[in-house]
Image 1 (cartoon, rainbow, N blue to C red):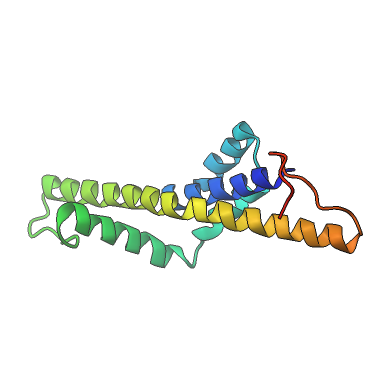
Image 2: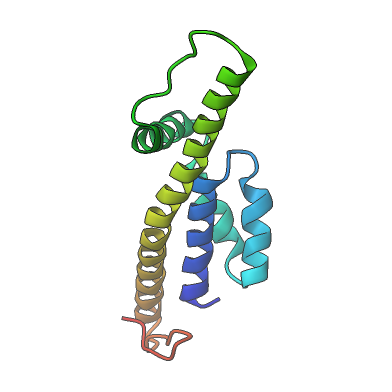
Amino acid sequence: MPAERIAAGWSIGMFIGCAIPFGFQLVVSVPLAVVTRTSKIGATLGTFITNPVTIFFIYPAQTWAVYRILFGGSPEMPSEWTFEAVRGLAGRTIASFFIGGVALGVVLAPLMYVFVLRAVTAYRRRKAAAEGQPPAQSSTGATAT
């Protein structure tokens, strides 16, 4: 598989790992990798940015940051627990979660693409050199450097 497709699969996984809640990520990332003909393994591994350890840091941080930007402060518990008060708090918090996840994914996915592309290209170059073969060309026709 070309290095660009491997990197694109990882990038898809990274974006989905940020934007979709934990537990639903593979249901989205793997079919998306199939449709885009990118690495399914990369798409799976890329979603691991959010795992049972990191979600306790990433999810609150992305939600809090966007909530502050959009609604001017931190979420506060309502003084009266009416349906309208709870619905308003839940709506703002859920919107902040998803907007924050998409924003984080937009930043991290291209970085993951570049990182994986360079790593795969370097690995293949070292492997070819060890076997005494010339460097492979990428799918764009450029020699892997």
